[in-house]
Length: 168
Image 1: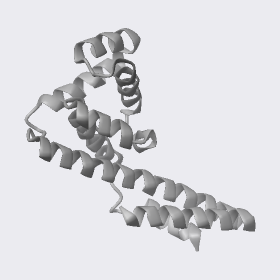
Image 2: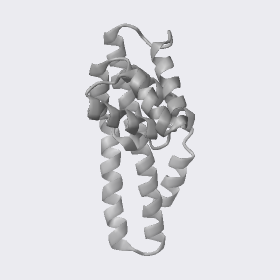
Image 3: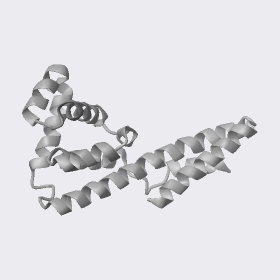
Image 4: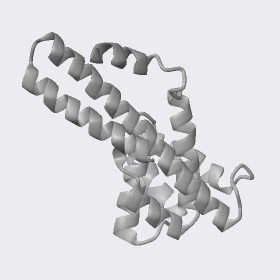
């Protein structure tokens, strides 16, 4: 029964705690803001929904907007503009930029790129897992309510998401 599957997924102990996605997203952003090529790659491959369960979505959008307008990420100018507009985001940006310059991240560019790619893959897995869980809950509700067409559509969607997840 699909409802039982949704509960099993929600209670899955292998499912990472939200703080794991937050920490991973922080590392990915920290790697990206230190290297223009990494930042461009991130902008091309990080879907905002992949940050939905973190506190970094607003900061990511601000970075993308600033970078798109200026074709570079000048940290001082970025902080000044962000500080005027949103002091809370400015504080979060400070944490990310400090992490990027710390000894906690690899200094070798090849290793940075590898960690960036792996981080993006895991963030995508988290986002797909969350979508799948949501679709499974909707499916259980549609089945309970006898909405056969909706249940069929949701079953297809769940299968597509499960396939995407298995391909990562």
